[in-house]
Image (cartoon, rainbow, N blue to C red; front, side, top):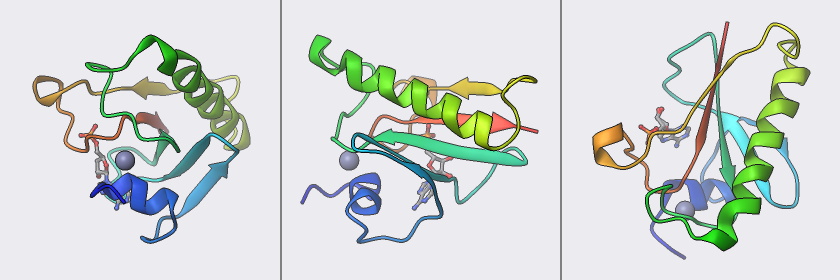
Length: 106
Ligand code: AMP
Ligand code: ZN
């Protein structure tokens, strides 16, 4: 397997506190939360970054946004709202090169 911390979490070879899962997406708590509620939403299939995503990845990234909405509703932020953030490349603060959406609320 690829040497990727999020791929290992998807494969259940590393632990994470899973908040949501479907056939294409996994969401788990960020280990260093920067907000009272901080969840990472990742595609199960490895994509490095928005910087290098391909057109064929667009639906999968859309699925990540839908999963983020589901997480928000499950956590009671469906009406109040929340922030979604995607860091893109080193200049954008991306440290883990498996694309992910930060869900930040509270
Ligand atoms: P980014 O800077 O956008 O690449 O964000 C990476 C995020 O992943 C950071 O907020 C880290 O706290 C988080 N993170 C790194 N390793 C893990 C892990 N094993 N489990 C959960 N979150 C992690
Ligand atoms: Zn990966």
